[in-house]
Figure 1: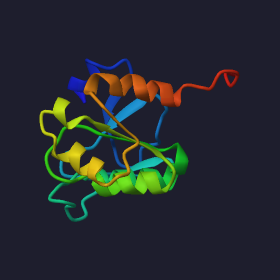
Figure 2: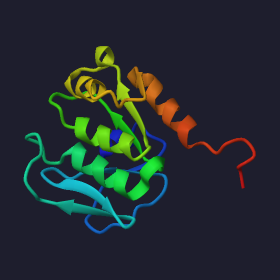
Figure 3: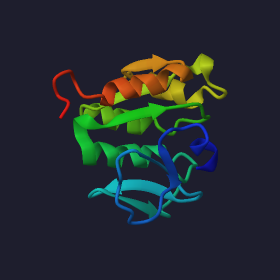
Length: 146
């Protein structure tokens, strides 16, 4: 969390069990614990590994899809293995938006490639374009500013 906080304008912190989700905060899963969203809170679980991973991005994405439906946004970045592919499918099935880092710009292209192979990725972008794309997705539409 500390490393990311140095590069982000948003608050970055390690998630704690039962914590209420706050807008403008980036939550990082604790080592060896799955992070899921339920009823506006973050929950940490020590259930079995998924695709040899704990934390698993698939479990997080599936819970985000259930909680937020078509407002959910998933991003798969550099990593090896296939974790994130099932969660990408779930986000897309609930009407959410899915983004993957271009495998050619990733240090490890396995996870973005697995997500793309699902056919459920809306857009594939180089790393430096992902942040601005997210900002555009969450920005209020013209005339919607309160």
